[in-house]
Image (spheres, one colour):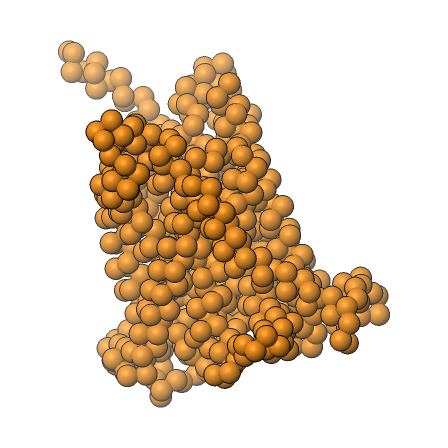
Length: 264
Length: 295
């Protein structure tokens, strides 16, 4: 293996150069939020919780609330529509596995900006039948997160013996819902968790579909607020960055814990 | 008789199949309504005029010099940022070779790559505006050192700015997609190379690079597709103008007629789908070849 690995000098050079490229924007973005008329202070961070400024930041709170709703509904679509269908396909329709994978990964090949051209007329109909509530956008988001949610769930399914588990549960008298809920879902937990967290991250950052369908979410709100107060948008950007980072560290930890458990 | 019992055995699950197939229905309906239908509508609107008659006139817009130039810019932007992202990302993967998956550095880089590859384009644009926008600390500092970043004019809100911001999410995506391939290099190959009198150089020249080439090419295409379809970063950075195809679609969607044509958004969407389909078709062929070494 020694032959394969990079030398210490190469490693250091890559770490410094690439690290600098990614650190510089983060550092100077942080610096930007501390600016205060030539000097530096915490004023832009304090403004966020300042009751006097709340009317200016109202779009962000509305957008954030909408984004949170969208996260919940999107994760519900992943867990209640995508995951059960994947279990069903793997258990009962093994021949459909390849076509299903193709469909699940298809949204990667269809840019959101293209999808939105076709979604506009569909959302006219959706608006008439289900109303124009923010949550309806989750139908579109369920599609955009599908490729990212598919992979961890499929990996979890491949890692356990789905057929044996379900047959054992069935022969012990469990109904199908009980089998899925009490036997399969707990075994697929790492995959389901990863799929949910990735979906949350994608929904939090989504802008294309929301803005072109004239909906309000966190990203469209950041644009609106940035026109009056550039600092606030950047502060919220850093908060979102930190949130996503914690989310993905949790995913990484979960994945490693799963690996360890499987090995023992 | 034997054939009858043989046929009877799988008959039981088959009888239950219609019911099980019903379980596929919710997903099928959902994907039809929100994936198949929008795609068909997006591509289809380009083929009809306002009164609903079939026409190829909108497709002629794809031959318009302005539109062709926009597609050219999009392809150039995607090819360039994918190349830089692929090379730098591969260097990061190489540097990480041999670091176990549970090592804190690995966990950190995996998480960071995930964040930065998925990070919303709007927020990315804000970060770059804060870092090297006019009046930024960095720009003033570099100017004091005698290096005027904007000597040739403000480029952040135009193509060079897009290149810089796109590379920021291309490198992490390369790390995510390419590191499994590097992890697939077997130590035995290095040992075989050693026992046959090879060196580190011959290992990479005769084994490493040829084995990894298909994976690298596949990752490159994925990066290309990623930046070709990206919209949010460009929309937030270049608030005016339609330098690339996604921005041209925005212009077509928000104003009634562009270039005096109706349903131009549909025609542009069709053009994008054609490019994406070609890229992804080559991608899946190369990926199949790359998988040959992952046994």
